[in-house]
Length: 129
Image (cartoon, rainbow, N blue to C red; front, side):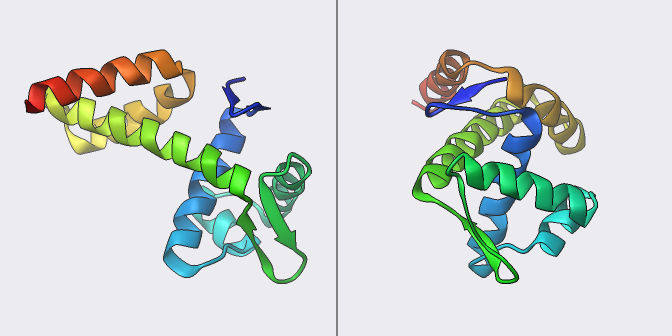
């Protein structure tokens, strides 16, 4: 399980944070039903994970009103998003098709160290110069 800003997260938890951030960027908040639809999961599974994320201080959960990320949750979600963006740029650089890249990124993004992501980012930036 990767450690993000002092928090140990499972791959599923990272996926939740990433989707919550996307939903709150679009509509200002997230609801269990929205997240269940995005992740193709049942509402009970989503509710359970939201409670776990709230206990870790990553989600502000207001029962029957939806939820948002805490400041800590936003920092973690940004780290996850940046890693995803670097991998997307890297696969584009390699010429991998969008469909294949999306599938591959979902498969490996949770297993890369911050050092590896930084090296990929540095490589991509040096190619732009």
